[in-house]
Image (cartoon, rainbow, N blue to C red; front, side, top):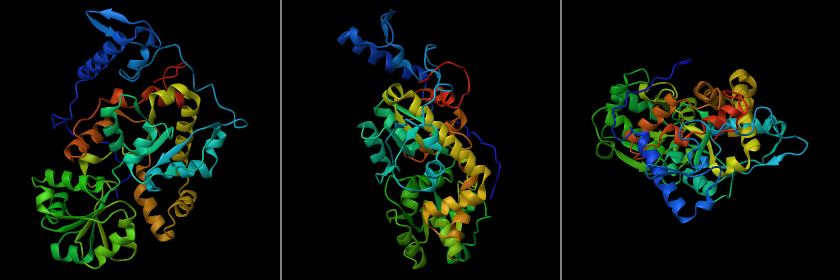
Length: 408
């Protein structure tokens, strides 16, 4: 396992990934022009300026475009909520997985309450698409999900904002049986090319079509000049670890492309090994990728700036605790996932290095995620970093950068 590794930005070889910011700007200009012609009085935050025939609408329309905000705003580093009169935030997520472990820790240690928030256990809505739909429809104010869903959402809704990171690694593993390794002559220490080639012609279990588990196979095979759709037989197993484990044991599948903790379960039971793991650093082009995130709508940030900032800070406190207190973090993880101590210890060892050190999302980690998602066929286009990541909101919440501003 590789620890303390530095993020590596893969070269931007895919032309679909390069999204010129000019196009995003023009899109907002056109949207603003239409809004202005319908009702100039509806503009908020400023006066429309007609420059060369282009209508520049309110400051609100351009929040996040350049990673900066108007200078007259609330300082969330000094203005805090009161624990004695907490603000309520509603939160949902797709599942209880390692990706959202910091949220559980923040609840258990009272970080949300200390920040002046009243937050119930996140509602489980089963899929990332459901998380996005619930947040977009204002059923919940914050969604804990994957960057994949934020990418998809942002292409149809300019109000989408990512407000922090939970995990900076792609949380899908390729898991094989002992028999597979013996027959194919590969192990976890083999070269990545050899490991991927050993999967050619094999039956591989995934959670379902269009999933992150299928996306990893697509990406890996493309890197080796192959096509996972035709060079493997993929079997949808759903999200059940028990079903996946049984399929590997009885030979229904030769391998699994699956979410943790399936790999840790397989290894602790002596059934097989994790052959390829992005979390372990096995895939150079994926090291440092932002993966599990928190997101919301711009209107929610505008309406609840102090509460959003408090949520970001509490998540950051939990992330720091997980990194600095392994013994206690393992106890929490065991209660959270209910896997038993042996599997929990293996899960912590695999995932802890990739739990975000801070909610901040760097341009580099965003670029890695974007390029992977396009090459994996998970999304077609990626919005610019400054349009989707509410950098100044995150920085202001954490007391980083210009004082006195509540950002986008």
